[in-house]
Image (cartoon, rainbow, N blue to C red; front, side):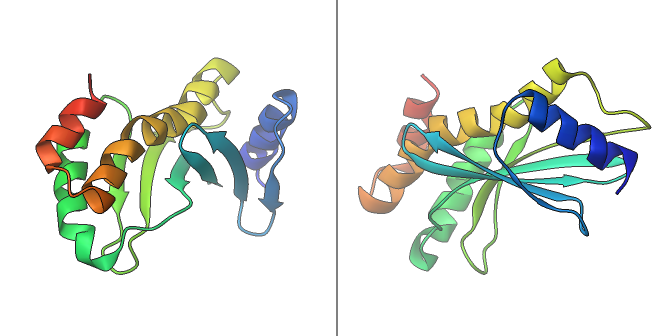
Length: 148
C-alpha cells in the first residue's frame, strides 16, 4: 500500500466510517443513506490524485439520457467544487470531486468537504433528475427548482 492509501484509511477510521477496501487497487467503497435513497461512494487513492465518485443506486434509463445530459449541463454550470457526469452507455450517474495530492493528504476538514459534498449534491439534484425521468418535468424548471 502507498502512504496515501494508509493515510486515507486512517482518516476513515478516525471518522468512524464503515468501508470496504480493495488494497490491491487502492479503492475504498462506502454507502450512505441519503434523503432520497441510498448513496454509494467510490474513492480512488493514487500517489498524485484523490478522486471521489458519489452516485445514487439507480441508473438513468436509456430513453431519458439525453434529457438528463441537458440537466447535468445545467446543474454543473457554476458549480465550484465537483461535477456531475453520466455514462451514456450504461446510464450511471455520478458526482465527482478530485484533488491533486503531493506527499501527504490534506487535513481532515478538507477531506470531509471532498467526501461529503458529493452526497449533498446527489441529495440536492436527484429529485430534479427523477422528476425529469418519471414526471416528464421540463429540464430547466426541474434544475431551477433544485437550486432554490
